[in-house]
Length: 216
Image (cartoon, rainbow, N blue to C red):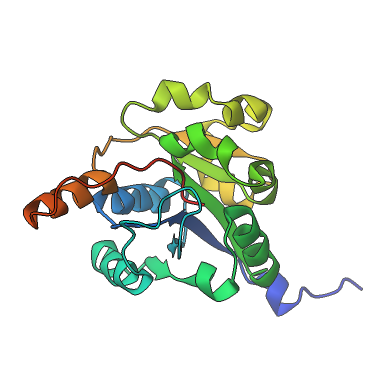
């Protein structure tokens, strides 16, 4: 006699996109990417993982975590975009470790890592970046001036055979990693660095420092 599926087996896993970063500050570009991810990837939710401190970015000029969380919630303004301090609560510092813990503790969810094309260029600088590709599927969204360069980046070349066509986007969350797609979209030129610089000029504090790095 066939066994009946358990309630857990019958329940569909929630498809959740993860957008990590300093969000210093959050802005319309983050929201646009998240809305595109909800639509194009067939996600139930997008979580903004606000990092306590990005290891690749200087402490100077970094707003307090509580301030960044509060502003991110104002910018998100959507019932399916959740702003989270989960990295702080898990005690993880690097994306690879955060993803491993989330996959371990939330077996009811199917996660997709979301990032802009600029971070595909830089991800090979991240700690244990290959483990990120091995842990969850990844959706890379177009960013101004980064499209062609990102597809020639070391990570894109290393995992070229794991790249899937954009037609499979709505199935990406359930794909076995490594699996990633490049999602073309209307480009949003907004940057957190430019917003901070404008705020500092308005406050008469002079130019903001330029930072590089990825949302680890």
